[in-house]
Length: 413
Image (cartoon, rainbow, N blue to C red; front, side, top):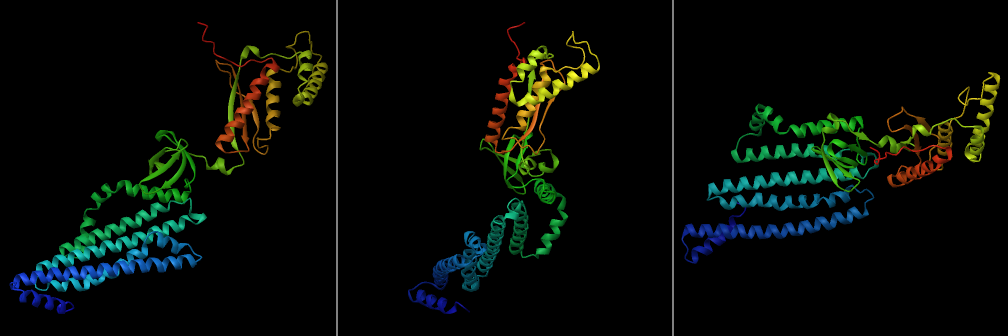
């Protein structure tokens, strides 16, 4: 017997002090347990500090940062705990050789502690892999948390089954068979987890969402950057710094907007209209065209167009007593061309991407003149400043073309 010498010494000592054999046996048990636990605690403290110091030095010298994450997630601390626990499992039950019922209880408790310590070691290793993979550029935007959580679910499932097996004394396969019979109930309980896991795989394989992507899901009030993807949810940090949590499987079952394509492209789209008052649109006379030629940006365009229109009208012998006859330039058309040239010459507009000014279908509020282009700068704040500056200029330029912007007059009944 491993602890026989200690037990015999204290048992004899208590008998000499006049205690009965039964009381001496219980006192011997308590003292022996106390001494073993003290020794094991000191040993655990020494091993834990030694392991930490040893592996910290090793991590500092190592060029690979994997060991740094092992230290961060306390993997070596948990492994160091296993040695004192093993000693306790080896020594402690022998103290209860005269108490078979207590011995069985102690063995069960120690086995359960060993199972949970094994799970903690596995968890720390998995977290180490998670942190290490996230430090690699090619894995930073992948849903690593989802896969780690799946492994942890299996680890906890096996751990819980093992605990029940230890308590009941039945084989693990007995519980696994029972779980198979209850598979329908298990599927119902873990429905969201299973859906989230499948969605995580689909998201990773199809590359629909990455960590760091800007997504918009108006249905759930999400408009910002994806900061985490796990089995149960996707966390989106909105631009007002609030956090919106969306169930992971909604990424495959619902529609959402991912702005990654815009961010990866050469510009951010500008698509906005100015409502021109219909009654202000008219043909331009020669005098008005001459006045508009003072605008340098469209001078060459007006010279070319005026010659072309004049040549056509002369060739077709058009009666120009009325301005409507033949071909004419309109203030709306000239302004549309001006807006287009202004965009093409703007330093903040990407000239390699689509630049267009187009007239949309007339509305009750006037004629929409839509500006369609792409800014060079995709940063939100800078983008808004560029758009504002462009439309400030165009709105201020409209009166030069004898046009008016539509404004709803609430004073009229």
